[in-house]
Amino acid sequence: MNTAATPRTIRIHPADNVAVVVNDGGLPAGTALPGGPTLVHAVPQGHKVALADLPAGTAVRRYNVVIGHTAVDIPAGGWVNEQRLVMPGARSFDKLPAPQPPAELPPLTGHTFQGYRNADGSVGTRNLLAITTTVQCVAGVLEFAVERIRQDLLPQYPNVDGVVGLTHSYGCGVAIDAPDAIIPIRTVRNLASNPNFGGEVMVLSLGCEKLQPERLFPAHAIPIQTATDAPAAGAAGPWEVPTVPGRETRGGVAGFGAVCLQDDQHVGFMSMIDSILTQARGHLERLNRRQRETCPASDLVVGVQCGGSDAFSGVTANPAVGFATDLLVRAGATVMFSENTEVRDAVDQLTRRAATQDVADAIVRELAWYDAYLARGQADRSANTTPGNKKGGLSNIVEKAMGSVVKSGNGPIHGVIAPGEKVTQKGLIFAATPASDFICGTLQLAAGMNLHVFTTGRGTPYGLAECPVIKVATRDDLARRWHDLMDINAGRIASGEASIQDVGWELFQRLLDVASGQRTWAEKWGLRNDLVLFNPAPVT
Ligand code: CA
Image (cartoon, rainbow, N blue to C red):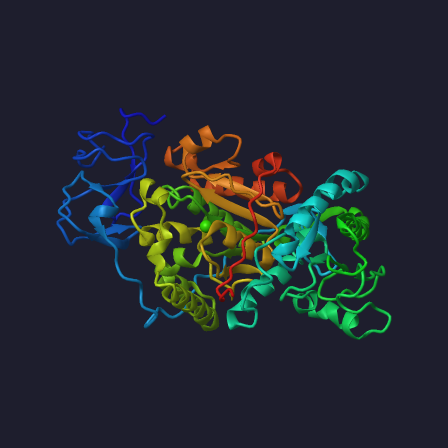
């Protein structure tokens, strides 16, 4: 146990001139640090203490990276916080290190899970009916229908885990032909084919919206627009491209169908609900026939992110996630790390780790695009940090980024995808997304994520309906208080009870268990955050 009697600090790198206070509740002024200075100020848990005199203008190093310069004289044993630290400017994209990737990590074999194999080769960890929407207007009707499906239909299909309405704020009132509109559009499209939905695509549209079903799913629009035996778009009731067993699927879609609320056949609200339930039945029949089978760990597509970070994030949870990332990549899986503003200050580390020059160029392309996006809104990467981050000891985005990027482990970076794109590659992928928990999670779902790892220090009850979220606490205190919300306690690393490797292996094993059907705390309580699209294009 940490008590005031046994002061504990963590210095990440021998060259660092600050260390982080570990003790719950922090340490009072006058505390003598073992082998270090005596505290001049009271220093809260997770905050930095100067290990040497730091006159104004001194470079402050954590992770052996300059996270800022002292704004005032700080004596040894003094508290280094955001008010006393001047943030460095963003690293220029000029003269970045050329790729010098680390050696490929040694293969790790023999790890499997029980998953749902799809026709396109992807593997689901859950068996869900997802209903895609083209526009927010239909959300209320869909919510009503989903409740009916849950009560009246799901009991007849016991092998289906649930029904999810993929609602969002897009679809109309937007500049849909603006170049950047491709991001929300392809996100909605690719969300529909997440591996957890079994290749069943069911669409609910209004009728008059800008994001027409045929624009969303062009491959399926062709027969609707041209075939004489199919109803004209917007003119008839539920339409479907029937699935014949053994028939070649299109774009990984096994069964496709849509309901349009403005169709003439709908007279009264209940006729809409009936159409939706009729359409849902066909999809549920097929989903109910899915069976779990033994799949190699290489079929996992894991998205990692953090939220509600503190100074421990980069010491305990994120390094443990990084260790598990390496295990997953060694096992042949896909791991996506994201959160543009939290890797921006580590861009030189990323280009160095890029497997090829093309990957390095793509990393810079995505981060430069994001810089420009932020600049259009007269902001920059420093807008990322929250009051909670600062209270938790993270002085600025540079410090936060250095602790965030370690989730990506130590191997080469094999690929890059832009926001909303589908990942098609194994290995370690930089999936460019905003750091917003909900937008990052939504974009990783669209990329094809079938498991989500989420680290938190301040604590967030984050969960997704579409995919299991395994939450990792950075501190003992959080894991203790939120014992029925946090799935893994990485705080044991700070207290010395476990190593980064111990927690990394524990997380890896838990990922396989959850992929096989074991429920996370968020699933047990039914905690679900909204999907939130990234729309950098104008609204009208
Ligand atoms: Ca985040």
